[in-house]
Length: 384
Image 1 (spheres, helix red, strand yellow):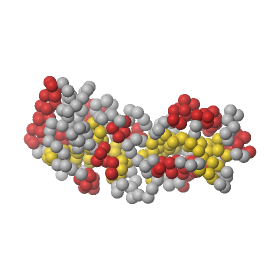
Image 2: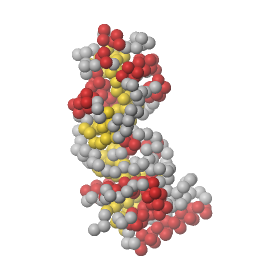
Image 3: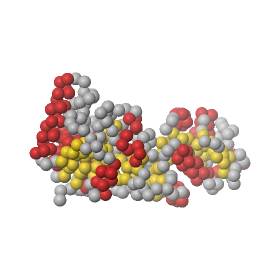
Image 4: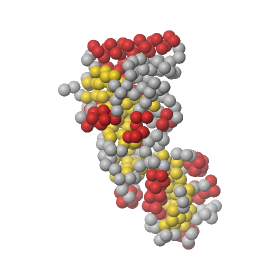
């Protein structure tokens, strides 16, 4: 993308390089007393494909406050992180030297990062800002960000952070509503964690605890998967939800068994098949509807409109290049995106795993697992 310029104030923007590290460190130490980025982290983000790091330069006497180690005239920077497989970006950090404030540089940086996000197919920008930073909050609101939540005890000094979002192109996207989120506590309990979120969304008195997470997993697990502990079967999750007092419906694009392809040991494969057969039998006994149908997104739309909550099995390949089945809760939708609560926040801040926007045209590819392209939903309601 070509260099951007603010003609009125003589400010130019460009992509950061390794030669800017000293100037970036000077800005960081000048502007922040806690939660500072280290030189090694700046170096990482300059090279990282999932990051956009842009610096602001100004050639004037105002630059007297810049680092003595740098003659580049750098007075500010903005760092944007892009979430793979989604349309979501995060304004991770932005700073402008005190001597260069009041010139619209922060606004210029944010707008430029928004353009760069759009050029990479991303339409949502999120950020966190300290609740007491009224100046920054006012700027973000001016630029079209709106608050959609709060994160308590977020910063090193234990202050809270507002969570804000901006839609980078015109859309009818609904403002994210309150939808409970739970972080799975083991590598193998995404299913019960997503199930607890969906049940709590229907009944806010439902308690989401690790004890419940593990109990639900024991009811829904296939015992074995590719390696390690077994994952959760859609019919097993429906049975677990039934036992918790909810009604459940399962839609699968092909008949069971579903998860034997990745199990290479013959004895383990036989056990998985036996477990799946028992799930199917138990579902029939409890009048749980298991529909074998090549479903499409209109089924999700109709279910969410009707007040149901929806779990979906996805492949994590779009997120982390690993072909692993993973359960998420679909929190809402609009004309452009589906929004997901992902219980696995093991590699980032929890707020990055809530209401994740995924383009509708990408969703069916995401919601397809394995060589057989298994696609399945679990739809929940409270009993009538």
